[in-house]
Amino acid sequence: MVPHLTTALTGPLLELEKHFLGHATEIERWMRVQWQDHMPPFYASTDLRNSGFKLAPVDLNLFPGGWNNINDVFMPLCVQAAQDAIERICPDARQLLLIPENHTRNQFYLQNVAKLVSVLQLTGLDVRVGSLLPEVTAPTTLELANGGTLTLEPLVRTGNRVGLAGFNPCAILLNNDLSGGTPAILKGLDEQWLIPPLHAGWHTRRKTRHAAAYDRVAREFGEVIGIDPWRINPEFGVCGQINFQERTGEDCLAAEVDKLLTRIREKYKEYEVDETPFVVVKADAGTYGMGVMTVRDASEVVGLNRRQRNKMSVVKEGLQVQEVIIQEGVHTFETVDDAVAEPVVYMMDRFVVGGFYRVHTERGRDENLNAPGMHFKPLAFQTCCSLPDCRQAPDAAPNRFYAYGVVARLALLAASVEIEETEPAEPAEADAA
Image (cartoon, rainbow, N blue to C red):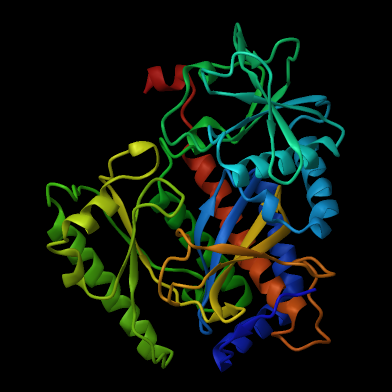
C-alpha cells in the first residue's frame, strides 16, 4: 500500500531519523506541553523536503485545499481530529458554514471542498457551503467529475452574524486564503467563531513571520532532543522593498541572497555535504507556487529578463509583489516512480491525519515542485505518522512517516505561535495605544 519510495539514504539521514526514534518519548511529551500553551490551527498542510542530510518544512498552508488527494484510509483519523478541534472551539456546535475559494470551474478544488464537507458531517455537524461569488444568488448545485455534487448557497448577513437563508451557524470555517483582502460581509462578526481568524489570511500574513516563529520552535526542540536545529530548519532572509517591473531593490535582493548562500556553504562544509547550495526567492505573501524562483548565485537576481520579472511580480488575485523571503533551498532526494517528489503532510487540530507525495516529472531535486505539471500520489499506510515502530529500521515506512509527522507538527506549532503574535489588538486597547 506504500508507494514506491526511493531516497538517497546517507548516514546523516538515517542518523536523524534514528535520533527521532530514540527520543520519541521526549518528543511526544514536549509536544503535549506545547499544546497546553498554544491553540493549534483548525487545519493546515505543510510541504516537506528531505535532502538526506536535512528534513525541513518549506511552506505551510493555513487554508489547505487538496483534501481530495487524501487516501480514504485516513478518513477515521480526519474525523476524530476534526471532532477534537470542534470540541475545543465550540463544544455545542451543531451547524457549521464553510466558505470556499471562488474556484467554481476547478474540479479538483471543488472535490476538495466536497471531501472536507463529508469529513465534517461525520463529526455530527450540519455543514453547508456559502459562496462569496456575487452571481450565486440562489442554491446552486454543481456536478463533480468524480460523480458527486456540491451545493453552493448565497451568504446572508444579519446584524453581526453571517449565515445562509434559514441557517445560523455558530462557526464559520474558511477554506479561502483571503489573498484579495477581507470581504466586507466577514468584517465585524460577533458571537461567531471564524476559523482560521481573518488575520491568518494572505492579505496580512507574511511567510517571514512564520519562518521567524519556526526558527524559535526549532531551536527549542533542538535543545530538547540534542540536535543542531539547522537539520530541520531552512534559514531565511528578507528583502522588504522590491519592484521587479521597475528593477528597484535588486541590490538588496542580491545582497541577501549572497549572505544566505554564504551561511549555507559554511553548514555544508561543517556537515561535509557535497551539493550545490541554492536559495528560493518567494513572494512574502501568497500561495499556489506563484512568485517563486530558484537561485544558485547572487548574480542571477540582477538584471532579470522580462519573462522572469513578470513571473515574480504578480501572485494570486493579481497582487503586486513588493516583499520577498529568501529561503534556504532544501534538495529533495525522494522520488516516486522515478520522478522527483516531496511529501505534503495534512493536519487537523494537533494531529497528523494524512498526506501525499507531490510529484513532478519535469523538475529537478533543487526546484519548486508546486508548479503546473505536478501530480499527486496518495500515501496509504497502516499506522499514522504518530506511531513509529522501533523494531524496524529508521528508514522503514512507519519511521520515515513518523519523522515527517514530527517536523510537520513543529511547523504547525510555529503557525500557532505566529497567529497568536499577530492577533490584532482589541479596539479599546488600540485606541489607548
